[in-house]
Image 1 (cartoon, helix red, strand yellow):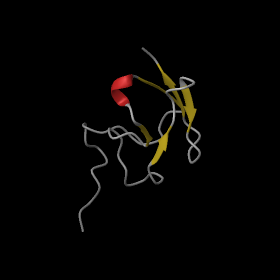
Image 2 (tube, rainbow, N blue to C red):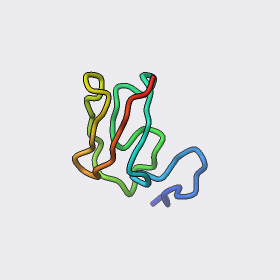
Image 3 (tube, rainbow, N blue to C red):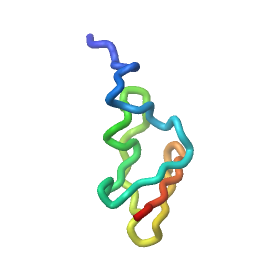
Length: 68
């Protein structure tokens, strides 16, 4: 069985922050984001952020803010 790449520089730790700024290039928005490690996170959930410019993950409570 492969060991998770915990210290892999290509990925950030999932749910490490409580607030994230995202751009339209990050859409469609999912938590955890593709750049985050997934082995220790919750299931991926897609968040609707386009209408209000903000979204909150129902699993981990992370706040996402759309910036242009």
